Each structure stands twice: as C-alpha cells, then as structure tokens.
Length: 167
Image 1 (cartoon, rainbow, N blue to C red):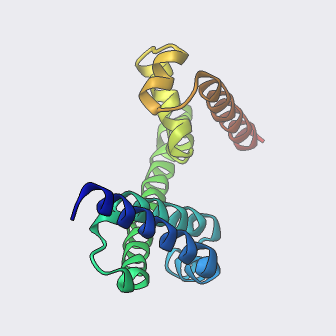
Image 2: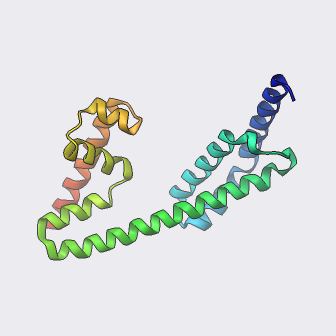
C-alpha cells in the first residue's frame, strides 16, 4: 500500500468515525451513562472515546468492524473513568474523616482534594511550586488566561465551602 492509499484509508476511517458519531451519539451516551452512573461524566467518556478512535484510526484493520471497535473503546474508557471517580470519592471521604480530627488545616486539605483536577493541579503548581501563570499554562497545556480563571474558580470554591462549614 502506497502513501497515497494509506492517506485515503485514514481519511475514509475518519469519515466513518464521524458518521458513527453523528448517527449513534445518543446510544453511546446512554450506555456510557449507565456504566458511569453520571451524565456529565458520560459525555466526557463519549467525547474521549471518539478522540481516541480518531487518534488510533490506523489501528482499525476492518472498516466493517468500526462499531464494535468503537464500543470496546467506549466501554474501556467508561470503566476507567468510573473507577477513577470511585477512587476520588473514597479519597474525599477519607480526607473528610481526617479533617474532622485535624481542625482547619485538615478541612482545607479535604476541600482541595475534591476540587476538579485542573483546579487542584493549578493550585498546587501556583502555591506549592510557586510557578507563575505562564509556567502553569505550559505545564497544564492551557492558556495563561485559563490559568487565571481556573485559579479564581478554585479559590472561590474553597472560599464558598469554608464559609458554609463555618455557618
């Protein structure tokens, strides 16, 4: 197979993946929601599954097997995300238990533990590593403006939670 043939096959696979996404998105989402138990997480799973399929479309040997291949990707991604979410919940519960015995410092640590990954990572890079916004942006693969917004959202979430705890 020459280079031109390979490019054509990759383009055809991309079109087939896009067609499957458009035709069956609701079904993929319904299954991902059932596996994950969370609609927002399921949307992320479907999105990430199709991104993976596009990235690895050269691995698809038989175009007729596209949909089963896509289901395998989706189920694996959903299981992985569900397991990660369950670990996060366990960590948060353990952290909240420790917080009850460790006073204010423990409470803050517990609240940080349940922040979304990007917010938590941005906080760590800013306040533990003392990085500036540009360095954080490079480390997280986002813009400096997004770093500012992410840090603001993280601080607001912490402020809100701490205020609610004090009431």
